[in-house]
Image (cartoon, rainbow, N blue to C red):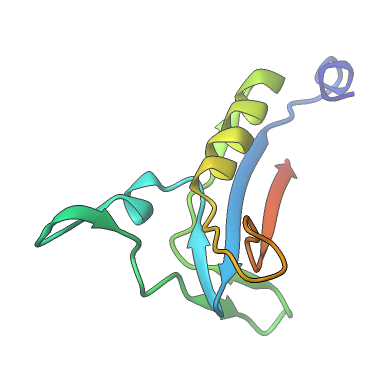
Amino acid sequence: MVEEAKKDRKITVYVSFLQIYNEKIYDLLNSNMFKKKSIFGGSQQDPSGLKLKWNQFDVYTVENLYTFECTTYEEIISLFHFGIRNKVVGSHKMNLSSSRSHSIFTLTLE
């Protein structure tokens, strides 16, 4: 549909992907957030998360959330799979691979 609409007007597609886990917001497309070096060797997740902002027009945004411009369907799918690999996953008695979280994959068309 986007390709068809591009014949009559300019359309730009943007993608972002976030996860809300333990009441913190993580950017699933920012690999630095998940591969932070520990002083002991290994890596650890950035514990601080991102900040949620609200303005007077009732618009919520996530501060410093990566947004990528995509020109093909393959780029969108690639970013989706990249983000899925970065999801935080924990286990509990009912489910060994539960994410116990919410993820939001956003496509913005301008």
